[in-house]
Length: 187
Image (cartoon, rainbow, N blue to C red; front, side, top):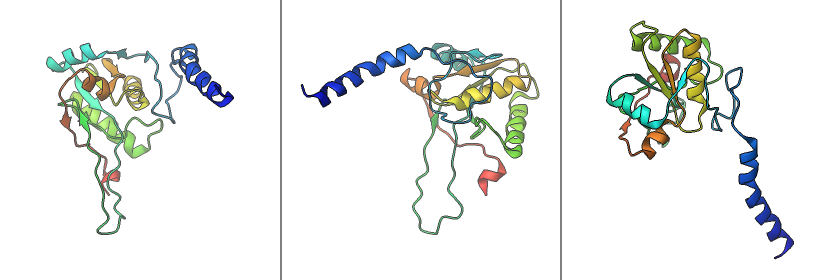
């Protein structure tokens, strides 16, 4: 083999080893504010991490409020007439409420109010209601949103780190979702 081919083989071989050496992701002390699609920790202080079989059971029993926090970008209002805009389709867990954009590391005042108001509405004001947060696999948005709910005093917070990807991989049904949005996103 030529030197270039040897280097390529070595690089391909060592990537899995380097990933294994890196080990688990530590739970950060603050919200994640960048690179939202990356490996996530196995824990979330104050919340319980759930796997797909448990989520299927909760869904079947209607035992939790399912909250999808995947970001959503609506059609920009300044697009010229006739511009083609293809809306992204979101397939999520049936019966979920899609609270778009509440999983960012920093929320402006309006977005925080939107999130708080909808949690109050979804729980009937009870901090004991079971809330299950998800997004996609390897998505920090759901980790951030679940952490906020814990910090705001919700005591039955579940985090599903495999998100809709894990749900779909398990052969579970999905439905086309429409996001709830604060007024700022509808302008």
